Image (cartoon, rainbow, N blue to C red):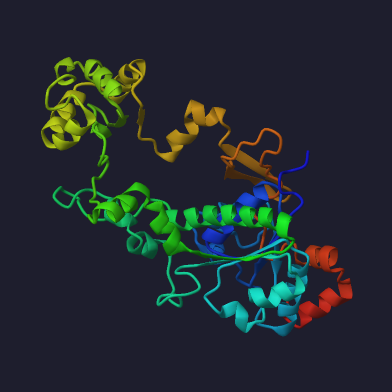
Length: 407
């Protein structure tokens, strides 16, 4: 079976999360992703442990953070600060469809590896740059990480409990969502550019910024501000436009309830044995429930304290009310639906225990994602790639290594 992107070769000069997240998706769909890393240290996230991958033949282990974004890739260790290393990258780029990088603005240009340089050797190349602030503007040369952009891009202004409540204040999302959504936007942009290349025959440059992607992720909150001039506020685990749509405490834990329309509201009231609330003149419509949230929610909270989470979930599911538990990841991977969907995958390794991995959520019936390779060791495929793609002889490879151009 051919994979959807098995005809593509990607040169990955990115590290940390946004770029590797993008290229792992492409690799899962079959692209040959060549990860270019610095000899001796490699991707920064290789060292972001514990926890660590199982040791392989006594080598220094890589972190599980690194492993989460680098399966299905081949690693080549090249020192791009050296002229010989720069030549190798240009030679590789000449035979690739896509290049992805997340160096600081202008860094690759100093090494003769900017888009203009590589377009000259491969006019069909799609060149995607991922930076914090984009290639232009007053902040373009600033450094930044995901956390910075969750704050700067507005996300933390709508995440966390209201300032008036205990524990109130801005919160970041529990995963590096600015990085991850930028990686996904990069996938979309690259696939769009590849489609455009089918018609034009030439590649193009893609300028992606974590700040832009985080602002775009603001969705309805950001759009509401543009129309009203009023910034959204934090509502904790509640929803600004729907009631009840939040976390409720039960007698032994917490559950999520999401009654998103008036029909669900009426069924919810019957399920919690408060049918009089359903047609109450202050709560009968979605708009009224939003306006009168402050006196409605405490009544619902009191009602839901009377039974266990499991009991409420059975009752609410029987009433066709969207609801669910709040799982930790042990509970997530024990959940029958998650197990049925096969979200826990394993990649066999010839020299170590199998590598556990979170399966791709992309479900294509004819060309599904495949898990062909575990996350590569630093420089694991250097000789293989140079011999296979650049036709370097063992003697030439040995000389490159002696010159410290490769690891």
